[in-house]
Length: 420
Image (cartoon, rainbow, N blue to C red; front, top):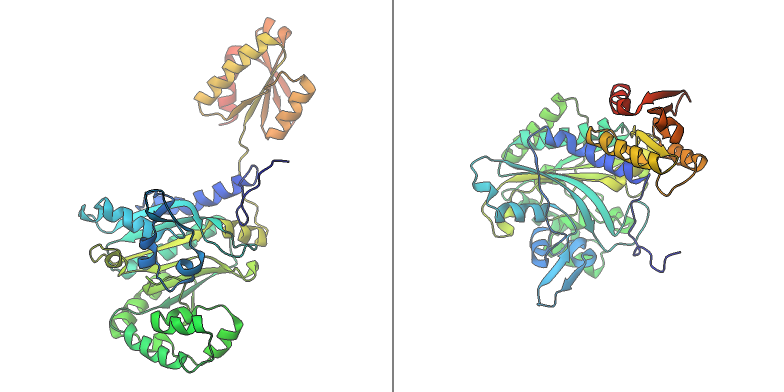
């Protein structure tokens, strides 16, 4: 037992389970790469103020969950709690929006950190794949991202997820709704912290998951009843485009999400097999975020999908991913000359793109063949002194058990044919 363990609320990804996480990341990224999204990677730490301005000072993320610290040089930094603000900051810093090719379409994958009470599906360190389309106000872009996420989930075999959709209005119509909501909320029996939110961002109160709060929200004014004509038309086009693509969704007039920067389109992917932590991903439009962090007006939209929760959703549905064995060929040398010859052949196999491994440590035939079985290899290549004297190696099909003598100099070409 090691002296050290992973910090509370975090986890290690180790084989063979780590292969599932890699497969999920790849499945989410694949439709993005096919749709013009380029990969971006940002630091794991950012200036605290980036998240305070962008995510919102009244959010739980900033007030309670963010890991913030001061460096030896006096800088106030935070482990990134989400990806959008970091990606937009990087795009602005690199002047990607000045390339003349808007929207700038980016995707990313990485770890994020929030100080929360650990439970299944909610960790202090978690993994997401995200996508952002920066610099264009177009309902088709909102629809595209929702459709691509749906496509990614279905490519994994997920079926029992739901898409919740809402509009949060814009700077024209939301202030009118904000006033009506504040008036309603001030008449409720709420604790001091929640009452403070009424003045800072009353929509946060709607996002409160406590039953004592939710009970009192019955009859609260709904944003959809306050949308201006432009926001209504925009939202209706998003709905029509998604529907035309054959993607099912549910209108959820109470959907707010936990970040302050969202405007107009907001959506969430939920899976009812995960209990209270049912959200597997979500996103929306954030037309004012660039200006909040000191950039020009750049209407944008994006989402982030949780890798951890997607894996849990797959398990809840009993979906087994088709993950190919990491090793196709396993070489078993018997004797020093065989070690030299087979090690060279393993190197050749890898050069032509065949996943190959080697029986290291000088194990005997029985132990080495056990390792070959555990590796999941389709073929084992075995050679001893007598085989090499005859210029051959033994090629064993690990599925059928059939064994064939193949010329030493022919084994690479033979395996290329057999493995396609």
